[in-house]
Structure formats: structure tokens, C-alpha cells
Length: 306
Image 1 (tube, rainbow, N blue to C red):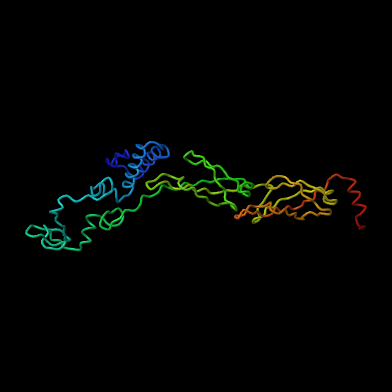
Image 2 (tube, one colour):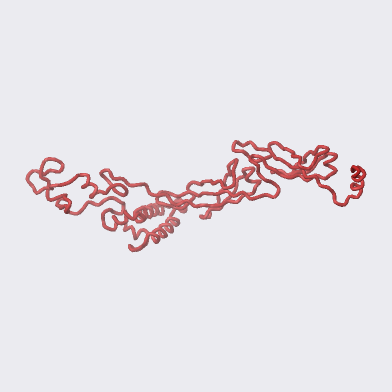
């Protein structure tokens, strides 16, 4: 692979923020979703991602700048391995001088290693994160960041769990299935619809916001509403139009119905998680005419003497 800074088109003095901006720009341009039939773009995307994997990691970047690892993240063998001399803490001092793994070979200026062999391998090949070989391991590349969205939906659509359409920051439009039994503030996760990253895309997190409705209110799995009924219908009984989540129906009002009485329409309420529905509870509000003199005279005649 070419020089990693050249791959991302940034100078070697670039700070972390500059490197991240450069990567995000190139990742969006070269993402396989944008070039499904272009193997060259896919290879370039792979190179850009691999470069960012190293340069975005402070430790790896330092190792790369010092020449300790190559552009693929693999450790480089120290120059002059056969005659390396250890520092003050002990280490190599010549050729092997014995028959064991750290002894010498027959006749020859050999290595005389002083210290724990595991320390030697740690120095040569790295330890833990970013290291390679001899027990070292590399953590998988990080996924891109999650992206948060807020989706406002109507009370009725939430109650009936109707699918909604949302446009992501990438410009892509997604049909979102609203789960049954949804509540205000619930969050839905769209896998792979977040920011691009070395280990793949992050997710989109969609928070549901349910709009208020002047006609309805939620009471657990039931939905409450008011039903205005003319005085004549309340006294004599009859049919009255009632708004429900699915549209208007004709509700039956029994004779002698008083204000405050609740009519229950079963299965017309909020959709539960199992697909069943609660009830619609309609509170009767009797309307009294303001300027009906005949009614006023009638009631005066029937009023008890004071």
C-alpha cells in the first residue's frame, strides 16, 4: 500500500480532526453503495479504510511514523537483527552461544540474551492492542458513529401502528415499520444506516414523538374521547356521530342518558404488542340549548315549588 497519508490526501502533520474529515469525505465518495459495479472504487474504499484504521489510532500512528509497523499494520523486523545489542536493561549482546533457544550456536559470535524472553518478543512485536504475532492481537476496526433522528407521528398513526416514511441524512428514504404498542419516546434502530467507519456503518437511532390530538387521549391500551349529544337525543335516545381512530361511526345513545356517562366501543382503542386493541371510551356531554323558550317554560312548570 502507498504511504498512508497520501492515501487519505493529508499531510503528515495533520491532526486527528483533519484525518477524520478527510476519511469521511473519501468514504462517502467511494462507498460500495455508491459504486456497486466498480471494483476499483471498492479497492480504493478498502485502502482508505485501512489507512484510517491506523492513522486514527494514536498508538498505531506513532508506530507507523517511527517505522515500527508497515502500511498494513504489520510489525517490521528491526534492522541488523543478527547483531542487535540490547540496552542498559539487558538483552542481546552478540550471537547465540549455546544449544538452547537463547543459547549459542557452535563456534560463532552469538546472542547472549539476559532477561525474560517474553519481554523480548513484546519489544519486537508489540503487546496487546495493535501488536502482531507471538500472542499479540489487533482489535477489529471500529464501526462508524450512530446517527440520531426524531420522527413525529400523529396520534392516530401511532395508535394503529401505521408505517411511516423517514429521510436519512444520506438522502435515502426509508419506510419505517412502527411497532405495535409504541409509546412516546420509544427508539427504533436501523442497522447500518449511520456514519461510515473502518468496521462498517453505524446505525440510525429513530426516537418516536407522538403528536397530541384534540379529539383523543391515551389511557393505557384504551383511548378516551368526548361525545356531544343534543338534549333531545339524551332524553329520548337515538344515534349520534362519534369520531373513532378509524373514522366516524354512529353510536347508540340510550334514552335518559346523562352527561358523564361513558360509552364503550370494544376493540377500537390502542393497538397492543400482540396485535389486539384496547377499547374506545366515549364520555357523553349533553348539550343544553341556550335560547329554547318552550323548553324553559316546560321545565319551569315541572320545577318543584320553592
